Image 1: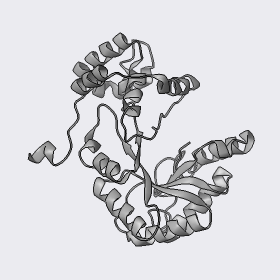
Image 2: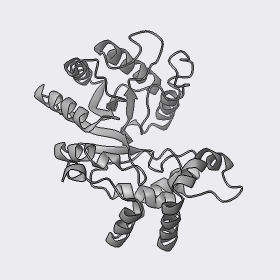
Image 3: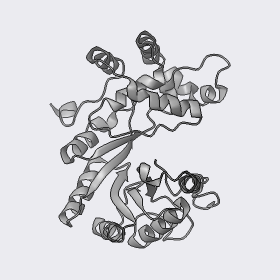
Image 4: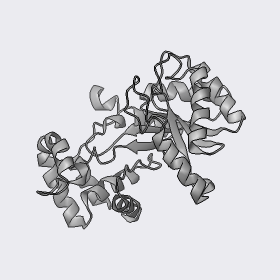
Length: 280
């Protein structure tokens, strides 16, 4: 179960009202359900939670305060995976790890993950954490889907080398890989994604035909493809309804054969691995 301290707010540093709503919802569910130990609880920090200089980024001061605030909203005494929402190149990586180590030592977090890091950011952070005697990073969240495979060049090779799990976000490319809505169906999504549907009309037509032949929805195939990638540990489904959540869970039972994977790679080709992709 994944969240972030900033989720639920207006995503603006001068409008803090509403920040933390997502964590509060999860916290209420955890308290009522009694299933805290049955899930892996993850959240993130970095984004502005106020207008002050210490209300954002990854200083040791902000990390400590942000963790305490998240624990309060989540109504728990520990976070399983505490993730840096973005890389902070203005804060020494040693300072970041010192703060994370203190949280681990106090039992407030168990593991450290990253999100939206480049390959060299993951390498730098992970090796620094290991050199200080810790595990380093255990996961990286990044945008990754059939239409956006840029991280295959350098980030995924780095993750595979170090044994760090990948957690893709936007697995459906903001709804594009759910297929083109029929007339009158989900008009909000159709209007929001119409430029992308137009730009990707040719591969989408082939993709939807393939999914029809497979007997699965385009959304299910897109998520199943990610789960077939060895580096992927899980994914951020981003369901808005119960039916979407149930469909995402059902994706776990879908097996794509080698011929299907080859065809998906033809329709949605990746960039290849660096430096072979551009220098060989």
